[in-house]
Length: 412
Image (cartoon, rainbow, N blue to C red; front, side, top):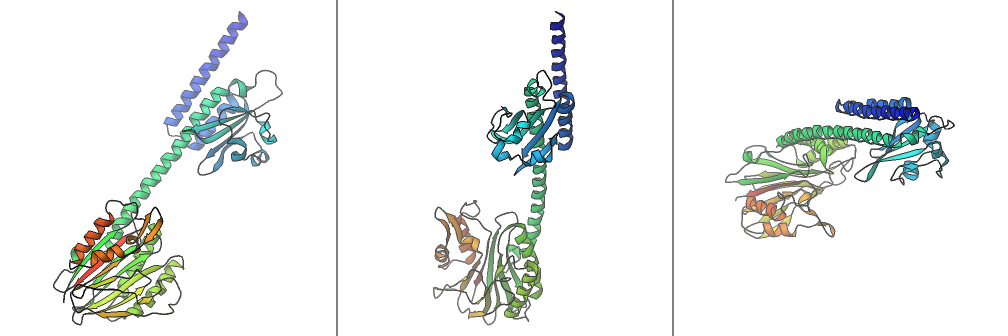
């Protein structure tokens, strides 16, 4: 009776200890303790309270990492390959007879899973394998499993919360960057709409910020300049390069500086900024209201479409050179020109408009755009038609790049 009573008291003490331990750990988690502090408390419980001699925890975060090592030599740790040695264990397993001799120094492997996906493996071994009696790794196995699950899930939640904070901070930064970038793009309300020309534009970055840019600049009472550009790639790096490019272009684009000279200087500055890692395609032009002369350089950009409404003639403006930042020095640079003699329109765009993804892969074509332009309608009506047909504002999944358009209607 005395032995039975003593055993009952010991079981009660053990049960009370386990409940108190779980309560303490839960309180620590609710107190938002760090990952290191939680692991330290976990290690103390196993080593000092439960007499577990060896502890390893491998946790997955993009790759398998060792987050806790106690009572184990570096030589043992180096010889364990999580994917080769542990991934096969879906339940608690005894590994004293493992084919990997390194694992035999441990008694059990405890997998921790989330939605059936392993996120951690806990290896435990006895502190004194020669001691008589029930091994603590066996005696406390299910309690250790419960404790391990609580700790690992808490650590995973800390990681996920940290990532969500980073994502939220990045989101706010991107929103600010998007607002700043939109300030570099001329607002439609300030673009010309008079008896000489009508300028209509559209800007739609694929992400919060993009690498597209267009501009319209009044050079003097008789001349205006305009351009459209596209940085290779997308995202923040493309946006930063484009903002730098915009500042350089604005400084260089004057009535006195020839287009070819502007192109050469822009190429030098893009090479200095991008170091050959990115390039910019550009279409830049000057238009003289009195003479009707349109002078341009196409630096590797999609050829704008010029349509004479009266003669029903369509031409592509191709003359120019390679893109900015492709080569240290531009080998061949040819400027093009044409005289606007009738009511006409010019459609400039970036490649996001014509490079689409479908079931056959990436397709490229301007046939539909040509059809939508070959009519007497004004350029702004043509642009609205193209936007609706492409379902750009509806989030078409076929589109995978920034889209910018600048269209000009010439009245003669």
